[in-house]
Image (cartoon, rainbow, N blue to C red; front, side, top):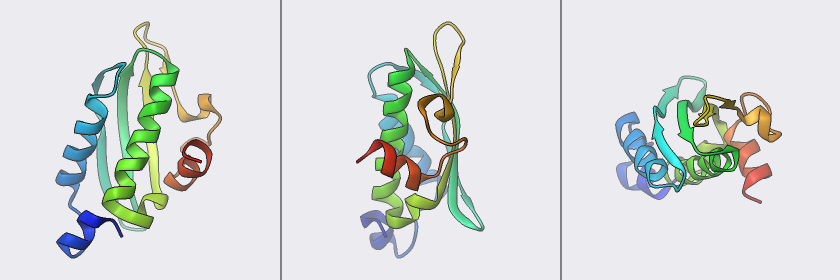
Length: 118
């Protein structure tokens, strides 16, 4: 369980998670906009969905890493069970998916941690 979850006596609410994720992604170099949204799921920790406008695919890769790190701090081991329904969009309108970066589609937080944070 993450530090914030421990302090609150359970997992943080969707609003707090969305605000924290939005703040972390918004300041990444190369991110120009996002519609990132986290929601709790009954049979998993949750799902992150949305589109992130990025300058290139390497920026989208950093978005995935950042979201996973933030969720780890908020959800602890529950971040492994979050499903990532995120897509990047470059300035020329081309979509970048986790599958384009060698991940499954959609990846879980566990896969992102194992493949991108190790």
